[in-house]
Image 1 (cartoon, protein in one colour):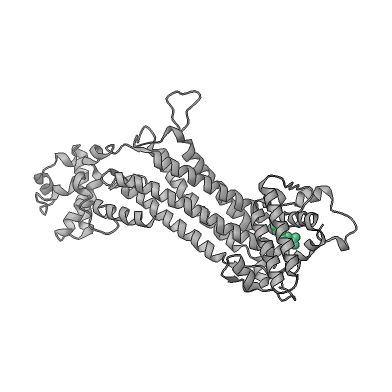
Image 2 (image 1 turned 180 degrees about the horizontal axis):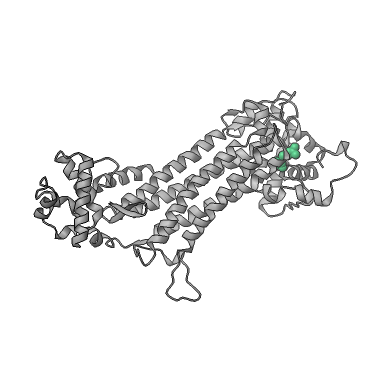
Length: 455
Ligand code: ARG
């Protein structure tokens, strides 16, 4: 027990298991031991404990870690309140009273803040690695599809043709921003709480710079009170995950649409689809559906932590122990979703010619015809209305762009000439795009090349 002196009775059994966080904060055991070792080292450096005592503590902590790795550490949540008290108790068993010296100048309040930061940094890096794999998988598919024409949509209505590569590159952009967000979270975590103690620092001359460097942080945090009260970095981490899974969810939705018989555009590998127990023809995109579904629990985690924090006075309050489960759950959900999505994208087969014929005469080429009028000096608003009239007439006459002649166009407006119809050919449509960031296959190829160098 960590606070024996003033208490006459031990904690009620139900209260112990109700309040113990060990079942989940044991996930932080490595960070806990790393931070404790660094603290012992720092205490010796400033002569609060002897070199020998520090060594003894460090060796004891190493033994505990080995035991844990071998599966020989019994982390019993009915016995220990949290990972900090468990490790300290094991250290007492191993090295006796010297273990009691480790807690000089520290509190579980600065400990938890420190180990959480270290864990978040590690986890952000893992997610960034998976995002990189995901981008690679998208680029490999995109390379094959720079000339694959598909309808681009707004309002889920056909708007203008794009290429499938261009569509996939849109996701690459989202993922680049996602990775950047994790980078910012890492930066935000890069200050060391140790030495803030319970909330007000210490009368011991702790070397905060030293322990910060020892643990890989750039510097110590600025204000002890804020340090033990702060969980902004967890919220920012959760929000970065919110956006990542939201992007995954949108792609999942598209995969679900594309694999339907109506679209028949993409086939997912058997490795990532399931059958129906009743309907033999079914091949279901369950993994995509689950990613879409799981996004909800990630958003829920964010809301739960934000709500938990909003009414807390400074500084540490026990409510804050509730910060861990939502963050862990969101992390594992996002990590696994990313892994599955990488597999799905890397193995999917694209029916590249699916839309070529269909778009040949499609009305979604009409905007380019309006642009043609603009080049002839017609104000765009007028051009829009001329093309509107043309489409109405074509609809009434039940004919497509393929079937109309220059004369037909001239009936609508005399500005038209024989070059107009050239712009409504799906085959040349993408190549006609002139703006940077458009689906012109030349631009898209260049972008793929440059992205491949970055990822
Ligand atoms: N298990 C606690 C948590 O996760 C550690 C900090 C406890 N501090 C305390 N003064 N009870 O928040």
